[in-house]
Length: 112
Image 1: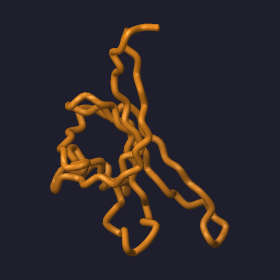
Image 2 (image 1 turned 45 degrees about the horizontal axis):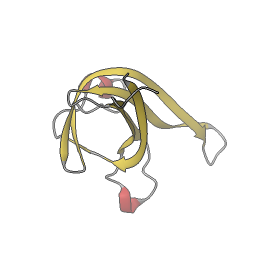
Image 3 (image 1 turned 30 degrees about the horizontal axis):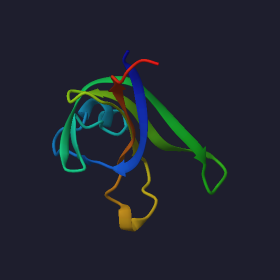
Image 4 (image 1 turned 90 degrees about the vertical axis):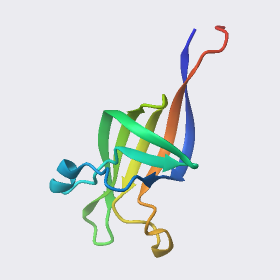
C-alpha cells in the first residue's frame, strides 16, 4: 500500500535564474520559479496543484499580504509546498524570499 508522508522542512530555496513566472509578476504577484535548488539538488516544477495567500495586520492596523503559498508537483517526484515572503524578516536574509515549507513523498512500506 502506498501512502503519502509529509515532512516539515522550512528552509530557503534558490530559484533558477530566468525561470520566474512573468505572467504572475505582471499581476503584481511573485513569479513562481519553474526550477530551483534545495540542498544542492535541482528541482523542476511540473505543475501547480494549489495556491493561496496569507495576510496579517500591519503596524498601522491594516491587513498586509505576508506570503504567497504554492503546492507544486515536481518532475523529480515529491509534492512540495513553497512560499514567497513579501517582506523578508531581516535585512541579513533579504535574498531568502523563497522557502520550502514541506515535502510530501510516497511511502511504499508494508501495509498495516
